[in-house]
Amino acid sequence: MKAKLWGTRGSIPAPGPETIRYGGNTSCVGVTLSDGSLLALDAGSGIRSLGLSLGDEPARLHILLTHLHLDHIQGLVFFAPAFRPQTEIVIWGPASPEASLRDRIARYISAPLSPVEVRELPCDVSFRHCPETEWEIGPARIRAASVSHRGPTLGYRIDDGDSSLAYIPDHEPALGADLDQLEEDWISGFDLARDASLLIHDGQYSDAEYPAHVGWGHSALSHSLTFARRAAAERTVLFHHDPMHSDQFLDELGAQANRDWVDLGGRDGAVEIGAERTEYELAARALSPAATA
Ligand SMILES: [Zn+2]
Ligand SMILES: [Zn+2]
Image (cartoon, rainbow, N blue to C red; front, side, top):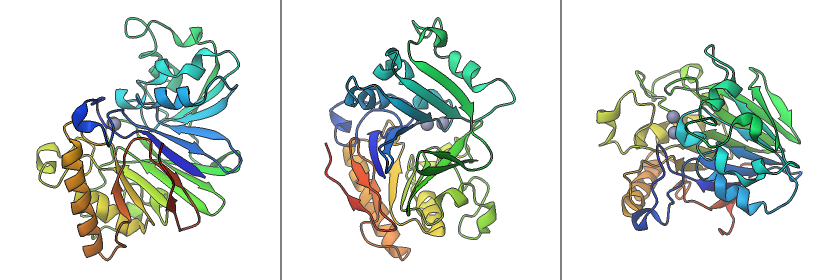
């Protein structure tokens, strides 16, 4: 299984010279399973580049949405494969008592926000609420679970062979809780991340910034690291960067993260700041970063 970061930013795209290394596109991770099947985790503005990378190939792919905040769906109407009749897309996401997944997404893909309506998309697109129990896509087992954020929000875990990827980009597991002391069963997202080969996790705030953002649905650095340590993730990528965080700020945050991780007893270099276009080759509890494009 391979994972490639196509958008690492949270909240709103933040392009510009000060974000050029870590990237300005909002959340999207492309996952290639061991049989070549393709999944996209979230459809932020990064999915536009993922779509272009596929060329004109007929494609069947699954898009797994954590939730419907704009930074996780805004790329859908700029995803080139959706405009080809030979493409088949299955969009998975959280159920809500309010309306179906299709109807909630159609609030964005409709006038006046969009020039096209869902029914006008040339591709074959279907919408599915994530089941409560594990399901299969190709050779992978997929699990979704509700996590602590604002509104119905899921985290995902993908197991393919002996390797596992946990994806929890919008997450405030420490809201009203002491993550150090909490029993595992009570930690939001714990089962998704347990012993994961790679954990891609919310890294929105520094510890100094967090007190002004309690309840906004995101983590301080120390929360992300404590969560990763409790879950015993092999490697952690901090993701969903605040739009105010420049490359220089993120360099410093990454250095701090590694120092703190080592202080917690972790392996040096096992925590990093997610950078757009970085690709990871996941193996069983041992992972080598591949070349980036
Ligand atoms: Zn977000
Ligand atoms: Zn969100």
